Image (tube, rainbow, N blue to C red; front, side):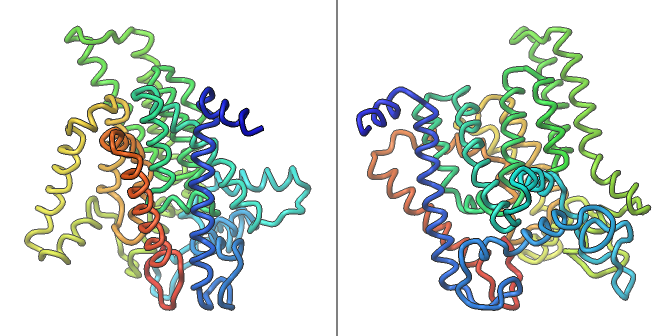
Length: 407
């Protein structure tokens, strides 16, 4: 048996990937158990030291459970009547969270005859999906790098600072898997094969508008490269990519439009998202507003615009570094479009590291940069990343009232 496992490790890429990923998940499980041991009474569990599955119901997992339990109609699910604060502002509600992951868990629960409750099924589904995600990450990286670098990249991603969230009831695992599937087909110019994953992604995690931006830039770049004689951009592929770009733009607006249809308020989705930022009933979404406010708080109001410009220039610099350029233009365009989207709409806070997880191709560039380290140095790097995971769990997942550091 041992010899057979050794042979699998040598000959089968999928066995190496799943083995490495299992090690990352065992580490994350141990860290969750440690974090639960220092958890006191909380909003979700009134006693100290909750068990593993109770501990995984914290934070936004509760919103997904409300969608799972109540669906569309009334509070606390997707209410057709938005909850309103006494001052007239839209209150926090489930419309900020998309239904893809709760629907998948509901389907899996139905298969088991509704005998497994949410707190067990949701993290189990995420954990199982994470192994499929690891396989697709490897397949993406292997399109650009050697097997050893690709495996190292998957391992690094599994040890990244907030990777523990990939086995909780958050939608991150499903969202990243759908994103990885779409990118895998786009990198091979099999454009329509990416569409089912894009449809799923549009109702799982925000950010499809950044996907539309990437595809538009991809079309322009391929057209320019064809004109310059670098690469061919056949007419059929031009039409396919153009159609996919338009469809992704529609998909990016699908959830806000559905929220408008269901509630009768054109700003239902944006006002719900803004409910986590301000209690002002006249609040409006401001482009780059969150990062400008951060710049103002750090350096003063005068320097806030320069702070945003510096971040934009930093993204451009990052995309043209020697190592990142090895990712190829498809992955670089995705990273650039997504980081621009985060700057444009996101309000920086303790969830920033989790929100940045879709920029995972950067991990492959880092893996290439560190691929030639000694085995001992790589183990030290993994230990360092494990410590960072502990810090993230202690600050963001462990709850101490009042707590303003959500994961």
